Image (tube, rainbow, N blue to C red):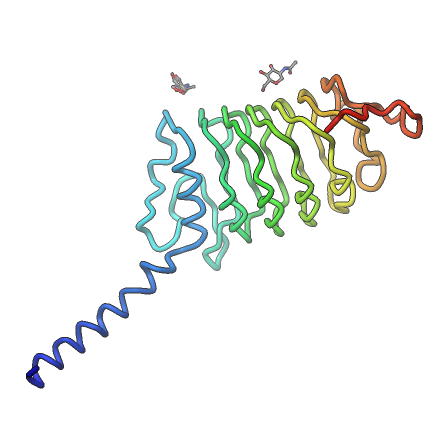
Length: 218
Ligand SMILES: *[C@@H]1O[C@H](CO)[C@@H](O)[C@H](O)[C@H]1NC(C)=O
Ligand SMILES: *[C@@H]1O[C@H](CO)[C@@H](O)[C@H](O)[C@H]1NC(C)=O
C-alpha cells in the first residue's frame, strides 16, 4: 500500500516534471531553426560559437538581431568563411527581414521553404556555390526589395513568379548558369540587363516573342 505521504511526494514530483516539460518540448522555434543551420554549416573561424541552443531565445547570439518582442529579424553572416548547406528550417523565421549569407562557400540548393519568410526584405546569397534551381516559392515574398543571387551556380529558368513581387527593386542573377527567357514584366521592367549577364544560356528580351527559346532549358 502507498502511504498518503509518499503519494503526496510522488504527486509533487509529477507536478514538477510537468512544469519542466514545456521548455524541453517546445523550446524556441526560431532558436531551433538557427541551431539547425549551425549544425549544417562548417564554421572554421568559430563565428557561430555564441549560438548556445540552451538559452531561452537566440537574441543574445552574435550575428543575430531581434525585435522588441524577441523575434529574429536579421541574420548577418556575410563574409564569414562558412561552408555547408542551407536548411529548410530557415523558413520558420517568420519575422526575418534580412538574410545575409553572401561571400561564403555555401553549397547545395536554395530551400523552397525560404518562400515562407513573409517579412523578408533582403535575400543576399551572392558569392557562394549554390546550385539547383531558383524556387518559384520565392514569389511569395511580398515584402522583398533586394534579391541578390549573383556569383553562384544556379541553373534552370528565372521563375516568372518573381516579377510579380511588387516591392522588388534590386535584383542580381549575374554569373550563374540560368537559362530561358529573362522576365521583363512587372517589377522586372526596370531591372538593368547587367543583372542577368554572365549566364550564357539566358535569352535577352530582344528575343521575346520569337520562336528561338531554348526549349531544353529545364
Ligand atoms: C577560411 O577557412 C579555412 C579553413 O577551412 C582557413 O584555412 C582560412 O584561413 C579561412 N579564411 C579566413 C579568411 O578566415
Ligand atoms: C562567378 O562566380 C564565381 C563563384 O562565386 C566566382 O568564383 C567567379 O569569380 C565569378 N566570375 C566573375 C566573372 O565574376
